[in-house]
Amino acid sequence: DRALQIRADYADAWNNRGVSLIELQHYQEAINSFEQAIKVKSDYADAWNNRGVCLAKIQKYQEAVKSYNQAIAIKNNYSDAWNNRGVALMKLGIYGEAIACYDNAAKIKPDFFSAWYNKARCCVLKGEVEAGLKTLKKAISLNSSRCQEMAKNEPDFDDIRNQEVFKKLLH
Image (cartoon, rainbow, N blue to C red; front, side, top):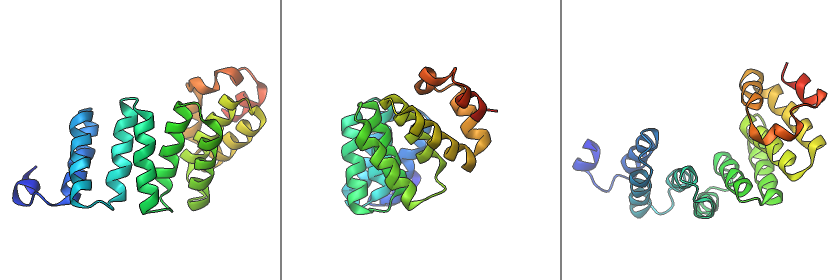
């Protein structure tokens, strides 16, 4: 806030303020901050992405997708925005398009375990269990402790939780 008192047209300060507000779960205020950053600098990919993250937190997934689209239009190799767009599409039940987003994120950043993990979730939700397990194995190979811990409680894996292959991946 202090930086903004000195210079109200400082896009980075607006963006950073928004990120801090997300941490405090003040989502509408955070969205307003990201929108101020975008008003100052319309091609600010991080602000567009962060706006999408915030919108997704309040379950406005279609609006979130639009923000991610803006971030990607500005910076096509933005792996986080591709991954986040995939999550929002997955929440909307648009699995095929979500998987394509995760593929883009992983192509840009092959060691991006979150993209692989989210793709695994999406494949399972889509009914592509074998592909989901294969993709989860890849995610675990990139960050075993974190992925295994997340997968243990992931509701998206409930349909495969009792399968031996799934159980083996978690141990």
